[in-house]
Image (cartoon, rainbow, N blue to C red):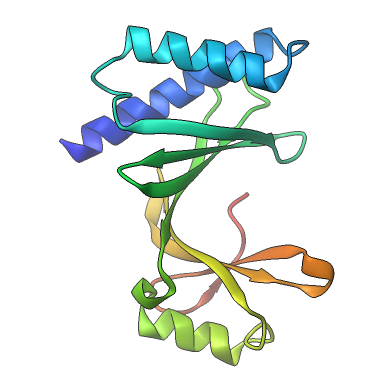
Length: 159
């Protein structure tokens, strides 16, 4: 049931971005308000628990949606440069304590081990098993995301 709801949500997120591209000249806040209204009216059973907070263009190919479901923060990255707006990854924020010990140990032993952890996430992608993302404060307060497999091995960023 949860998997079906997540799939429906991901389809709706794609619909949302298709609509966003069509009205790019409007202010983000106006578009966001309009799209939320459309999604809530057309899909009341699916979008009941989600609160879309921010939409951000990451680069020329990717966009990120920040949303909240049941008091948990999520970030979904999609390929925004294609008509079908494919889902790249969904990141669910977790507490640092929920990071597996093997992942936290790998992070602490890495070159970033002395950096302060800002946030941590479990990341799911459509075509592989879950992995972890750790956001750290780099120099000049820039946030860097570091990815690890469930076995604590460094992973190249998926986006």
